[in-house]
Picture (cartoon, rainbow over the protein chains, first blue to last red):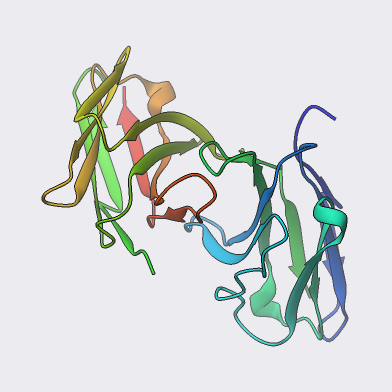
Length: 112
Length: 112
C-alpha cells in the first residue's frame, strides 16, 4: 500500500466491551507508534515498537490497554472493558528510521 | 526520558503577519527536531525538520531555528495565510532508531 492503513475508520461500542484496532504500517518501516488524540487535544503517546526490541509501553494509560506487533509489521491495539473516557481518535504512525513519521488516518472510537 | 514543552498552546494572528512557536527539550543528547502540521480532521504531516549540526533551516515561508545551548527550537511562519491555520507539533529525538517525543501542540488561527 501507499501509506499507513488503519481499520476500522470508525468504531462504536458499548461500555464494557473489548475492541481491537488495527494498523498496517508502510512495508519495511521498523518503527511503529500508537497515539491517542481527544477532540482538540494533543498527541498522547501510548506505545512504541522498534524492530525486534521490547516495546516502550510507558504511555499506556491502564492495564486495559495492550498492543502487539506481529512479524514486525501489522499491529493491533486492544482495549478491554472500554470506558467512555476511552472515546478518542487512535492514530498509528510508522517510520523507516524515526526521522519522518507517516500517520494513518486514525480510528474514531466512540464508547456509549 | 525526553520531555518537550511547547508554547503557546493557541496563537491567533492577522493574515500577513508572522507566527512563532517555541519548544524546549530536556535531553541534551537530542539531535533531531521535526515539526508536524495537522489540519482540521486530517492526519499530522511533516513540514520541516532540523538536525543539531545546523542552527537554521528555511523552506519558503517557514523556518526553524535551533539553540542547542539553551535546548530550544522555534518554528517561524512568515506572511501567514488562512491555509496556515492548523495545529502544529514540535518533536525531538536522539537519533535514528530512537523514540520521537512530541510537544503538546499549538493551535494557530490566521484571521483574514
